[in-house]
Image 1 (cartoon, one colour):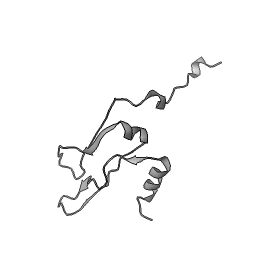
Image 2: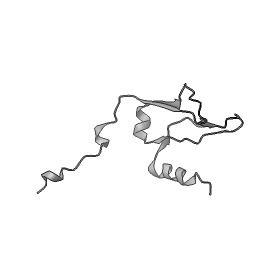
Image 3: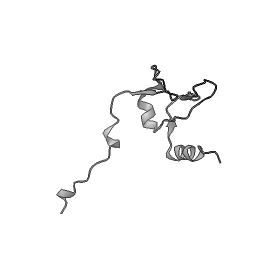
Image 4: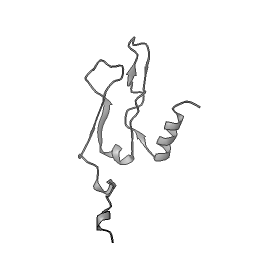
Length: 92
């Protein structure tokens, strides 16, 4: 079993999708000889529908991990998905 398999299984079980394009490099060894996608972003179908972009940020911060920039259209996701608070102080 590959060490990433449990994460892939969870993504599939929860019906999530990758927000980054396939084969996006998010980590590079300082020598430049080794590169990989070690930073994974996943979201629900609703998030993907509102996603404007998800990509490597243009600014290089000097780290071996590339910063990821993402933006959503329409700001906050619909309120129907928000968790409602229980008002215990108003209960009998």
